[in-house]
Image (cartoon, rainbow, N blue to C red):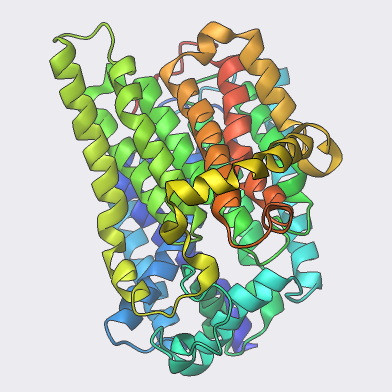
Length: 492
């Protein structure tokens, strides 16, 4: 009983830690929406609430890693110490940032009713996912062999330097995978005092809720609140994320990657939309997007490909977004290069301890992609495209009941508003999806296993990670210019 009381308090403290971290990066403005739109505090403070969930989980996980990497002991004492940090941090930011706001409801009673309905569906969906997740223990291969097993070792040995995690025969599969998920599960075990993989799965529906609320909160700054909650509902009900066994119902890392990579894209999109008007005030938004990219990197190795693709897009799109501003081309390129450097540094530098630790872990043949990234290997793998390209197309456009309609929606949205699709923020999403799919095809070309086995078993999970980008693209296309007097795009 004491364990579950600690679990409840620990999760609240974890959210408080996330709120404190979000405030430290984004500033006071996320506490006080300039344009309150609803009587429900959850609607007005959707961004703050969602970020508290997402950053609380990631911050707790990485905090445990740093503590153990420095020689500390993991377990209940570490989890309670992080909970205390969360309470203290929340108390500080609450005291300095709290403010009262006068409500300015949405323009019509119908819109207020719609917002309440959409928000209620998101909350009900969370409880449905939570119930389904807790009904079954970890049962899929990846959630047990890659993540769950490491969480058990961390719980038993109380250290990321456990000899078992360094033993070639024990860690046969992806020994160098990032540790966000195992450490998140360890935090649950530490709070309840036992390793129960059912309770470890409650984190994943929380990630789904955090992504949905943050999505709504950011979109409310750029479009009518009713439209923002419409697209939030679309995202929350993407079948492969919400209802699939490999989505937020499981203990695998693919849906969490979708959450954190989606968070990164959301704030990069927000940054590009306001970069020209906001100038230096947009730096916090870009910095936060970089931290989200770092969370993705600490989640799964696919985060490396996403980071490279997004970094390659930031500089030219920054130049494009600065058209019409004062200064010549050289000044625009200078600002763009500084933005790219800031994004790269803020993503990579906090993860240096992880990269140093990763070098000590054993490797496997399956993971040595960089060693096979040579022209002879790529040339030999070109025939695999005859299978992999049609396979991806079928997954995206012919398996809608399982995958969702977002790929058709993205295609039709782009064709229906071509000029808007050429705006910097929309090109970011197009480039991210295109670059990520190209990286997947190249991985299939150089993989040591047959492409039918390599991509056939992973393509649906990789497409899951890109689903938030597709929904955000549709939102930007169909409601990209619907603003009213309450929406201020330079609030960053």
